[in-house]
Image 1 (cartoon, rainbow, N blue to C red):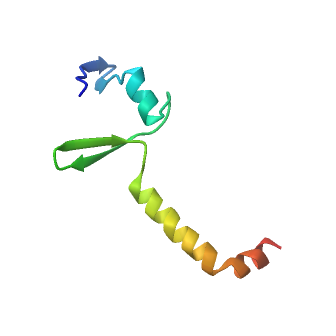
Image 2: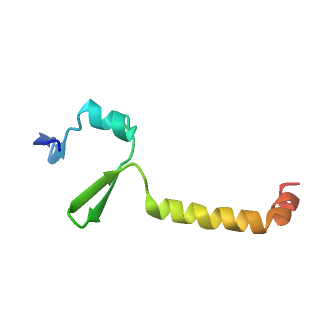
Length: 74
């Protein structure tokens, strides 16, 4: 467990993530992270479950309608 201190950043309050955590999450300056509620607090992740669900649906449509998409590409 890592303790993080809340810091004043302009008119907001933020948390500075240590480089070890950024490396473990494979994050860099400017990346987006997602906060979700968990049973024991919150979860911070670079993974967006809603976007992944949308991409799964899109892949399914593209697979089923491959011939239509080929014709449209011509």
